[in-house]
Amino acid sequence: MKSRLALSAGFLGVFATAHAAPLCPPVLLAATTAMAPEGFHAFADGNPPLAGKPAQAQFKFAGAMFSEQAPDQSGWLAPDNNNAQDQTWDFRADEDQNIWISCRYAGTSLLLSKPLPASMGHCHVHSADHGASPTVDCQ
Picture 1 (cartoon, rainbow, N blue to C red):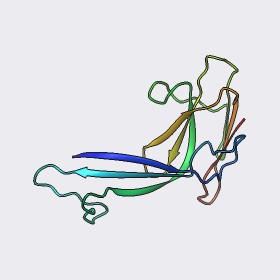
Picture 2 (picture 1 turned 180 degrees about the vertical axis):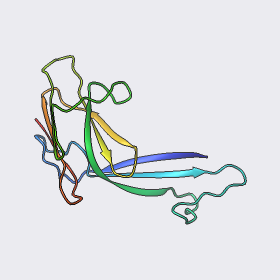
Picture 3 (picture 1 turned 60 degrees about the vertical axis):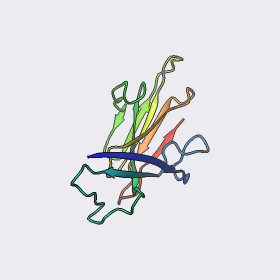
Picture 4 (picture 1 turned 90 degrees about the vertical axis):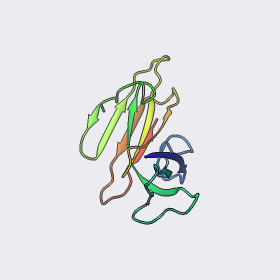
């Protein structure tokens, strides 16, 4: 079965950062359109999808990971401090270094990724208690 995927992200500004815009959008909106092979019918959560309209889902921010290049070109960097609720990364000052942040979302393998400004050399991810979204702070 083939499917098409459309992504959008809501920027609600709920994460503390050194910049005005959040590093990771708090919500990832994804839409899929199934193209069923002959003899099959597509269903979304047990219901027929609306004709011509993609099924939409909303995924909540679940954490951040960092890499030295785009995620498809590099492995993940291990945090310098790693415990159950707090992780920190200290990036060495290198003009050739290209650190990327990748935002993870609960219930999907999709990531939103972008390069960090070269001026950011330290990132902290705090995992909140009781199902609240983690916070990301980079300076």
